Length: 166
Image (cartoon, rainbow, N blue to C red; front, side, top):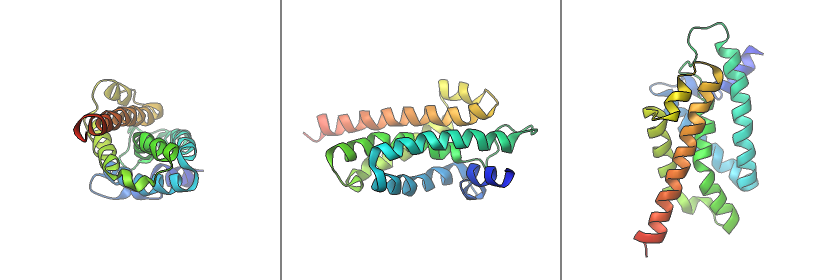
């Protein structure tokens, strides 16, 4: 069970990459999200978000049980879940309009940058969730950072398509 938890929590060992394992985790989430979207569109990516959160919560619980470190840097499944949340508006837009999701590449860049910004700086509720000091906090801070990033992506898309590119 411990080996499976480590495999899930580190996303197949990506969490051991240095420097900045969280950034590597977010980066590896991008092609994974693309593949999931290509296979099943927005609905499958949404299922992936939920599954990664639940599996990540379990794996983080197993990995941190009995440890003083509630959020070891090698745990990056939380970054994957959060990054996928940040990409949901792009997945929905492509899926609902029958677009090739790669044409939305500026949104992918924005989702990555915004998610990393919110995950690193941990403003407001993101920091509060992180300070819980438990597996739920490990996962929740990245979920909230992903939601903030998704909102940012939608705002930027609205500004670009509704104001700037007119």
